[in-house]
Figure 1 (cartoon, helix red, strand yellow):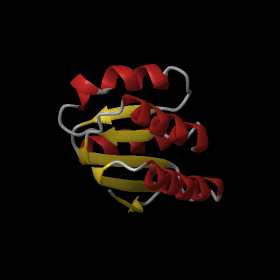
Figure 2 (cartoon, helix red, strand yellow; figure 1 turned 90 degrees about the horizontal axis):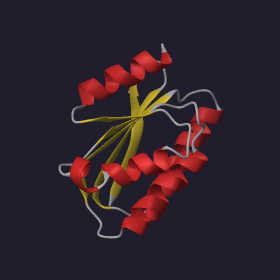
Figure 3 (tube, one colour; figure 1 turned 45 degrees about the vertical axis):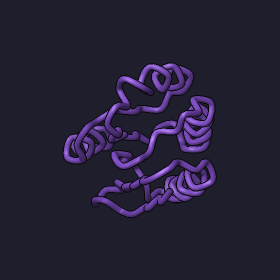
Figure 4 (cartoon, helix red, strand yellow; figure 1 turned 180 degrees about the vertical axis):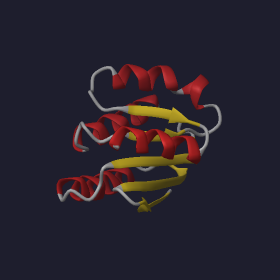
Length: 124
């Protein structure tokens, strides 16, 4: 899997592009970088572009990665998740259960423009 983390827009919006098969260690590294930037006051919101992620069959692994990320990233940071095809049918119900345990503002999108608009409104 490749995880690219970069500044997306002024105002502290960062973009994480995730492609290929998901690896827990790569997600942990990306989340740690985001947390460092948030702690320094540089990161205000994250857009996660996961449109090219390969679905893993392990629901437990997916649950662990969401829990890991949400437990590390400061709870006030909005996350816009651009889901891969089939996410709504395969993973969204489980992810909503996970999100119910956290106070993180998370929105689900199909396109980057809508995701950027949503996070921009949250940090304005």
